[in-house]
Length: 275
Image 1: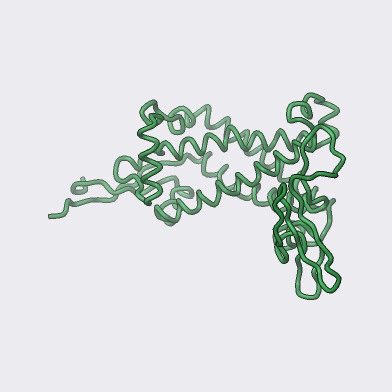
Image 2: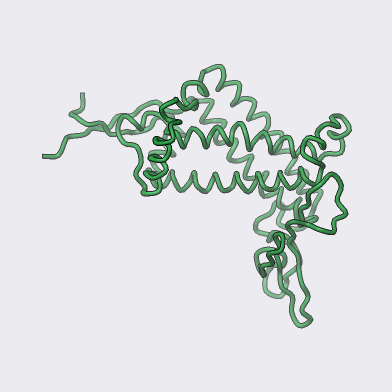
């Protein structure tokens, strides 16, 4: 005989967490798309304090074959043909050399000045929203109570078990759903206190005005070109995090997860008859 279960709504996300989550989603989306527009002004990346722009570690460009052109993306010594996506794209008959395609940038037309305006505006939205989130999280104890992993969760055996369970799409059930698991906590902490601050600092390093005010910034990251490379890599890692996050939301139940980020309440199923 199957054990009876009942559904319970538990309060999972505070108002500040929900509001800053959605604002952050909007800000990061515009930052990514406008950032690709800025990148397209010079679709190559370098390392070092000063660069001669002769040896990029990543470059998106076009090769003219005479009767036709192709888009090429080069990462180190690896060269890939990426026509239609990176290096050379556009509607048939109207292709043009550009790093990322028009549909992936804001604005869609090539305009560095407009791209920078969009990028700087939403950078301020992102920073101010982040300060609100950090302040609310510290005052409410959100980081200490909800995101700090316990000693038991950090045990290698426990982490390996969670990794294996996630790989097999076996997720926590019942009482375990009331709290974040270890992988969630570590991923959120790495993004909140690692990737996002690194994005802000490397972004500031690329500003000549900030370099003049804080000359230690370029030295911290090994130069403006290195800061630009780190900024780009961090953006890629954040995109990867978002994609994995969305996949997990769908796997555990999109409706329940999205509802909890709107109303704050998350449905879990507990064994036994309803009280």
